[in-house]
Amino acid sequence: MRDLQPKHSLAEITARLTKLPSETRRIALEQVANMAGVSFRLARLFADRAPFIAERFPPAAFKAWADFGRKLAIIAPDAASNFFVSELPANFDKIPLGLLPKIFELASKQLILSSSNAVGSLSLIPEFVDSFEEKELDALLELAAAIADRSAQHSSNFLAETPRVAKALNAFGKERALVFNSAIRLMHELTARAGGLSADLWAMLPTALEQLSPQQAVILLDSASAFLRFGGSATLHFVNAASSVLRSSPEVFESWNRLACTLGDKR
Image 1 (cartoon, rainbow, N blue to C red):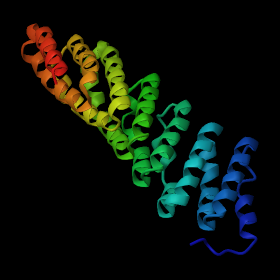
Image 2: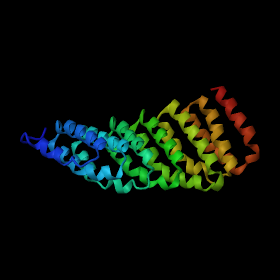
Image 3: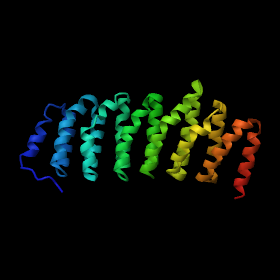
Image 4: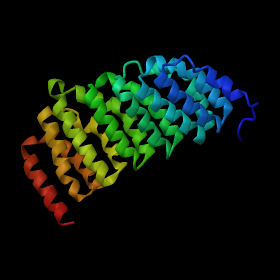
């Protein structure tokens, strides 16, 4: 049900935005007008919060934040109320400013399927930003968005598992970038084939990569990419078995891999 408010309420709300920079003010006024059609209460909360956000986010990020808030207000008003009064900017201090629009765009994509996953993702991302370079974070956000095209829940699961994966990658020291790149390539290929199943593989990686050398880790991930032609579920089983072979008997892995592919061709 829409809030019942006197006609002058909208003017009172927009008056709070007059001191914003011109570009940000235009964005905020548009969003207030749209949001007032849903709820004057949420429009007031937005207007109260907007100056605080505008001080910390560049215009593109501010617009992405406002767009997400408006969409959330339509789908889940109570969640939107909590969103506007949250300490979100403080949690985002370490995130590169250029990536903020992508984060809210990801959450907006998840919002189509699940408001709880969308809001939850905004809390998950700050937990692992210290573990990755900016270009790596960008790659992770693109991957999360690709997963979200199929499943908001799996996209959220992917983000929730990322701190564990980061810890596993850090064990490779100076060679971690090589392993990261192979992992991201495999994840994108699996996502294209099997959607949310890639989040299950992401959760498996810390165990699969344990005690492997960087070279063995790359062999494992690249071999799994080649094995994808036999299907997503089969690839998950392959990763589990292949990592065991590489740990226990690396000298026979090449022969074992050929045999696995031969058996796959006969299915």
